[in-house]
Length: 256
Length: 250
Image (cartoon, rainbow over all chains, first blue to last red; front, side, top):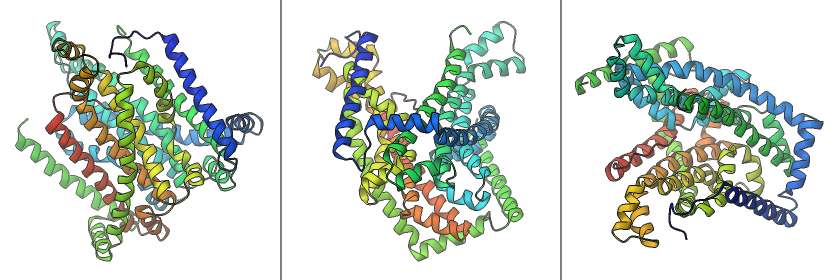
């Protein structure tokens, strides 16, 4: 074992190890799949099915787009509600005292437990799915917005005061600017949770497009089709979080 | 801000929220049960014993998968935090699986693991393990160089540095990993139970079918309590024994 922090590790070797990890995983997958033909499909056939279902028949692509639409609407609502509520909680101590314990609890809540209630409340409609996505994503947005506004940047506020900008409006603007990275962290985490919420909505509310795809594939032992769905979803999740993360990095860039 | 002001805000806010709840319940009707309907449903659930049975079953399933996740994530994270080669290698799997929606794996897991204890253990494990690995790993990888240098001055090199400096420095992260992992484990157990109608999942599906919203809400409240009480307990442990290093878990 090398001592901690003593080796400088080139990006080339790091990527080499990552590729090795992928190769080992694919090899092991292939090896297991060749003995367990019923329960596991080899990686090549998963890729083949993935390409077929997204580019040729487009069944999976349409299913994903339908689920993503719910995710996007729910996510937009979560941002539209979560950021102002988080700002209110962060800026007003009385509101914070009332809502903080509740927010903490709601953040830890397994939101999917609400799915059966949503079926009763919203029926088998897209509204229920959007509501579930909203419930998945909103609390992490609220909590991170709040966190950014609660720890007031005393140094920055002093600096603003030194330059004679001690009005309430300027102080608020300084605090908002200071909170922006934290708000964006909430937005990034919220994007990931929105995608997960859309998957949960497909599986636990009612299955029309994506849920149907996954459940039918599993029920008919079409494992390659099932895993192609999982892989596609993973890619979509990475893409969603990655694109919000890119916005976050742009804003966080020093000197911006 | 004095304590009494906080108390005043909290009691005022609680009364306000209660009033809003009562008004909303009165307006919406039976679909949204009010406080009294919820209390009555809760009492019924306790009297029949259904809730206690379901929750204890859920807790056992949480414990199994969570224990497994702790047993795997702590050594894995502890090694990845100090060995950059291992980190690059294992980290590839952890990141790939971290972003995978475990829920989308449910139809697959049920093929592989069946509907027995193995299924719950697998779902709970997959929900909890990657978060925990990443937090433990961060605990070791982000030990400040000052702490390391101090250890080196006192002769802690190689495995000694690991055992006497790095592992103790990672304790706060270990407790944070336990807390986040527990929360994830409860979420995983609820997902698994909703999927194959067991424990609280079975109860929720049953009440949904007959639109017994007050009973369903009572079950949800207890699921929330199961998650929140555990998280609060572990956070108290964190404050008591590990308050000297701030862990931000996003």
